[in-house]
Amino acid sequence: MKFCWSTLKVKNMEDSLKFYEEIINLKVNRRFNAGPGVEIAFLGDGETKIELICDKNNEDINVGKDISWGFEVDSVDEMISFLKEKGIAIADGPIQPNPHTKFFYVIDPNGLKIQFVENM
Image 1 (cartoon, one colour):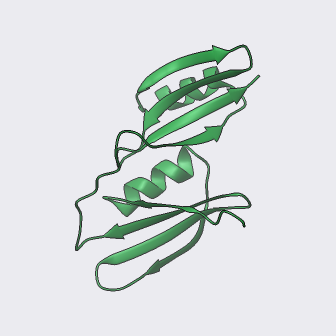
Image 2 (cartoon, helix red, strand yellow; image 1 turned 60 degrees about the vertical axis):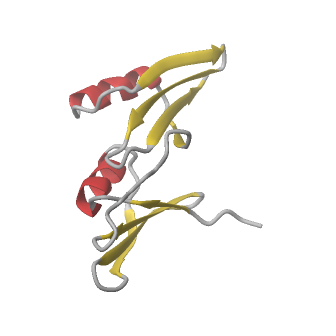
Image 3 (tube, one colour; image 1 turned 45 degrees about the horizontal axis):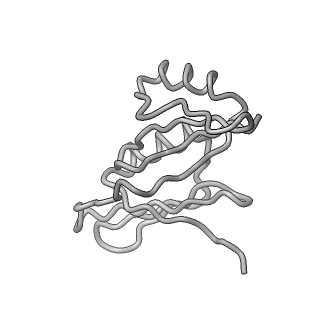
């Protein structure tokens, strides 16, 4: 079995695409209308793929506080500096639970926790 993608319902497609393209560095693979008021975008390739769904007919988005998506970075410190330049607040961390891993969280435009992880 192979993991295909993770889906996130979003409040605003443009804000979400800007975040995932500029901050996470995932590029739009496909983007299309899927019915009246519904738009879908797939981002990424290889093993990292996400699907964003914006439904103007149902804008009640509830991501939940206990889920997060993690992305590996070369340097936590450099990523924190980059995010500060973009005006994105650090939600938690940095945290170093052991000598080999360091991470922190931000919140995406939809309330999803995004974890940036440095494996040392």
